[in-house]
Amino acid sequence: MAKLTLRPDNSCFISHTRRACSHTPFIRTTSFPRFHFHLSPPSNYSLRLRIVSNAQQNAKEVAKAKALTELQEEEVEKQHENLSGTWPPWKNLPQRYKLIGTTSLAFVICNMDKVNLSVAIIPMSHQFGWNSTTAGLVQSSFFWGYALSQLPGGWLAKNFGGGTVLEVGVLIWSVATALVPFLAGYMPGLLLSRVLVGIGEGVSPSAATDLIARSIPLEERSRAVGFVFGGLSVGSVMGLLLAPPLIQNLGWESVFYLFGFFGIAWFLGFQVLEGGEKQLNPKSLSSPDTVTNSWKTSLTELNGSLKDVPWKAFFQNRAVWAMIYAHFCGSWGHYNCLSWLPTFFSEELNLNLTEAAWVSILPPLASIFVTGLAAQLADNLISRGIETTVVRKICQSIAFLSPAICMTLSSLDLGLPPWEIVGILTGGLALSSFALSGLYCTHQDMSPEYASILLGITNTVGAVPGIVGVALTGYLLDLTHSWSISLFAPSIFFYMTGTMVWLVFASSKPQSFSEHN
Image 1 (cartoon, one colour):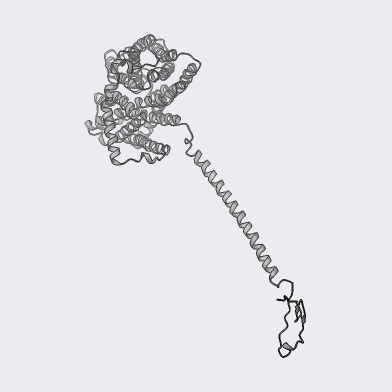
Image 2: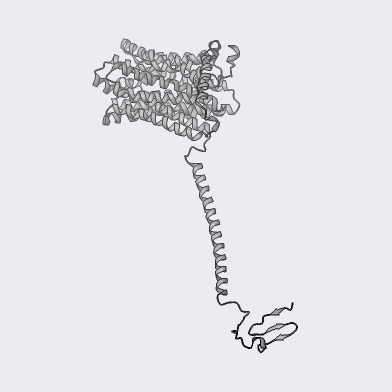
């Protein structure tokens, strides 16, 4: 077949073999319109090209904008990650620092609730018509619960962990503190509330000791103990500073409401902090049957846990007896000074009540600074290779001999003006804080496993001066009318004998009590 080619602007068909023109007879009677074919593009072709070009450009711009948006979103996510990484401020702190910080804060609240009654007892006595004997009974009821809860607190801390026991202790003493205004008119209820405050605060030292023993290395232990138990001095200062203006402006009830609220807030805050640390683990979501079985297993283990404690080995160890006696001696001086120094400043030094109240703050305030100094010194000595037992003996000797010397100077008739006596006693009692780097570290040094129980044993004996010593001081004062005989002489005796026993028998060497049980 021949090929035909269509030529623009021509009505003829061209064949490769022949040519047919418009005058061909076959198409003479037929009229066809003339077609014009052009090789140039149509009029809207450039428009289409521009549209396509614009579309491609828009697509590129959209892609760039999308990529830019993705980059911006990544930057925002990184910023959120950075913000979440620094908030809350304690999030990136090592876990042991968080434990120490929250425990120290709990101890601040602990002593605030301990000293609030010593200030509020004055208006309460006027309102309810209490005599000195009744007021003394109310104040001493705290030590009943405090003494009874030491050993149980150590045992619970060992089995359930110091953190759990501390949480429960703070909640118990805070609720009991907040209930005092409701129970003040009913003596049995009031005494019970103070016993509960003592129980809650009594388990706290053992709980803190367990936390430190399990989570803090030896070279940081003195600072950890000093920081945690130093919170007691801070709490004493804050309690003595806040209680008087609160009572004067809002009534004595406000002290118990506010201080109790502080403890409850700490408990709730600790739950949030602890919840933020925990990761949701599907394996930890157990069925009720699993939880029940777990509790049965735990109870079975706890039934035999008391038998597993090497009680016999404890009391056959001379170093343990040294800790017991040292704790008793230190508590005798501490509790008697805490209870009777304001009266001594007022009656013996002729200071008015306002001056006596402010002067009473000086020893715990100075103790805050001494505690940090002692802890740093002890840890530095241990890190340099000095034997731990030697460091503990040095610190505890300073803690005993310093107040003994200062009390001796204060009890002698040297003609010193009142403010010099105040300064001497403040310095001696502040230096007694070296015990936090001496006695109070020895429990963990000897046995991290049984540290909480050991502290429970020594602190039980250490609570006895709060029950017996304070009352005996008052009795001797009425009998002799001499502060030197009633307050200073017994404390000096126990400080001196405690130093001798500690230097001879104390030891911080690790003990395998279980092997001797």
